[in-house]
Image (tube, rainbow, N blue to C red):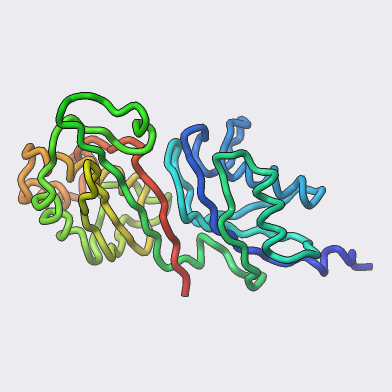
Length: 255
C-alpha cells in the first residue's frame, strides 16, 4: 500500500540569501561543521518532522556570501507559499534568509538545470592605509587606488568560450572550458564591484580572476601579461587568489 503522505510531496524552489562568515561553505560537511545547507535542512526537517534533503545551485566556499542562491527540496505542505517562507525563516538563524518560494516540477534540479550563474566581487579601496572594521568581512580591503580602466581592458579578454585552466580546477573527469558571458568592473564610492557571469565556474575561478586583475589594477601586471597568464592554461601562472569574504553569488538563471 502506498503511503498517502508521499503522494502529497511537492518540489519547492527557493531563493536564499546568507552571510557566509560563520559557515564552512554551503555544502554539508561530514564532520558536523556548520554549513548553509546543514542549517537549511535542519530548519526544513523541523517543519516536516522528518529529514529533508536540500539541493543547491552553487557550492559556495567558506566565507562566501549569497543574495541569490537557489535551492530545491521536497515537502508536504498544506498552506500557501508565503506561509512556508515565513515558517522557514522563523526557524533559520539570522544570517540565512529565504527570499522567495515557488512550486516547480518534480524533476527540477537547481544545479543541473542552471544555465547561468552570476557573482559579484567587492573590493574596497583604503588609500589612506586605514582598515575599515565595519566592512572587513564584506569586501576585500586594499590600501591603494586601483586602475579601473586597465582592469576592465584585461577583463574583456575573458568573455567568450575559453579554457580557464589558469584560474581554476575542474571537477574530476571534466574539462576546464567555460563560456563567460560578462566580466566588468564598476566603481561605487570607495568600492569596486566586479560582475561576472558564465554557464558554470571552476573551483575558485572567480576569486583567482579577481586576484590576477588586481595585479593589473596595481600596475604590477600589464594587460598583455594578464593575457599571457590566461592563455598559458597553467594554474601556477595566476595571481594570488582573492579572499572569500568579498564574493557574492547573486543570481542563477534557468530556461
